[in-house]
Image (cartoon, rainbow, N blue to C red; front, side):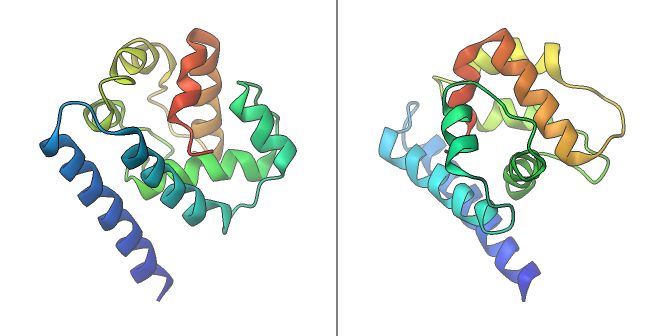
Length: 144
């Protein structure tokens, strides 16, 4: 049943992204917020994060918190952007991104992705931490 629910969440998010991509070149803020809310709800239930961790992350401060790391991995996993070896699919991430985020990812992906097997929670945390250091607007990727 859990696998079916996860598949439905991923399918729903992908459909929303496809509709947004087809309907206009610039997704509306409320559409993006809905996607972020869906991701947050799907992953915060599995890996609860405190308000302190959440607020710090919104301000580009990443606390070394295992639930937060796995929350980030969960978000990438829900979007089918990370594999079992902790390798993040940067090309798909850029392809899914809104026009506002694409330039950020063009900078962050080549500089922050590691093509080595590692724990997925650590990989997600390391990628986004690196991205924040390179460009603080990377925080826009987070579903917080």
